Length: 120
Image (cartoon, rainbow, N blue to C red):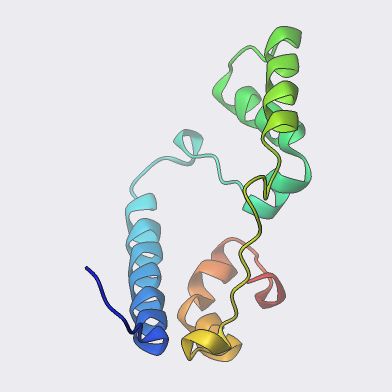
């Protein structure tokens, strides 16, 4: 729980394995669920157009996206911008990883969701 030394390479490898297993299991479980019960949303799309993407989610769920809700959502976004509490910058290298290794582990996920390895 407490340490004076962090092995960032061990943490990197452990996190890579953990996230890869989670994504693989999620994709396997997803196959058993009808597509009309799942809405896939790319995080970068949500960040670039939060109002539009939430509207699409509401349309998918057949929920009412009314003007009051939209104004509340805009207010929330304005008072809680991305990086409100600071920016964290990490690199694969500092965790002993490289893009080719990460891209290989998530190759199936990227193919399924049409994600370029340049955005991962």
